[in-house]
Length: 302
Image (cartoon, rainbow, N blue to C red):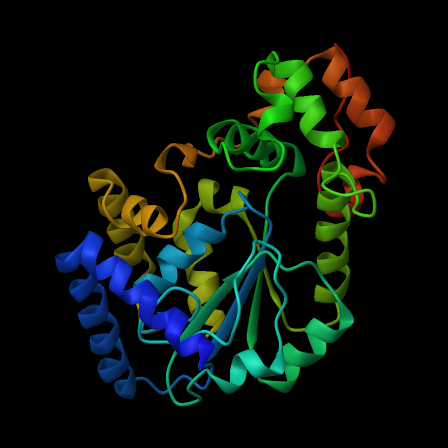
């Protein structure tokens, strides 16, 4: 009962703040559910796991152009229970509330655990793992913290110069029993990569999108058996949406995320910002070789 009340309250809040947009979202999602009957793909449930700033919002935008409805944000899907956080896991209960005959997309930042793998396979999920260069993600994370006054690290880095603030963002733990962000990010990537070698998971690298967006989108379409959709058209829709700055910014705003946290996602930005002090910290504290997470070990001082 509580989950339905929370869902209703979220709907009422949205309706009061932006009535036209709310009705438009509901209409679009119902339209998707009706049109989805035309498609024969057996992959009704898709779960995307990725660290923040790894390209998960991009993948979400791609699925917005398909018959899939977002499970954790759409008013047409009742999410299972409780309050979501960035690193929430998945459960059997969650998928008992997912209509098996309708296309549903779920995005989380969940780290790998054996139980999550087993739940996903048991519920016949198509699993997409979104990855990006660890160094670029951590830079994006730093700027996100600066912009988000409610982030637990905000007060620890505000007022510091970039070098000191960035290093501080890497080593301060949320609690004494949690890993520091540098260790957490490294093993998040490594663990998902290792299990993906054994399973039919789709591993997507953000850098590949920046290099060839059509090929990147085609890989998703092939994985979920939606080859009849045009990757070129989807990319055009995403480009138009971002130029108008409507869909993405509005969707982020309604769920409490600030528009200014959206950055250009430059590939290799770390090369412009890492100085000797940061490189020395990285080399001394990263728990493993970058090549193990499929990136060149090129952290060298000039």
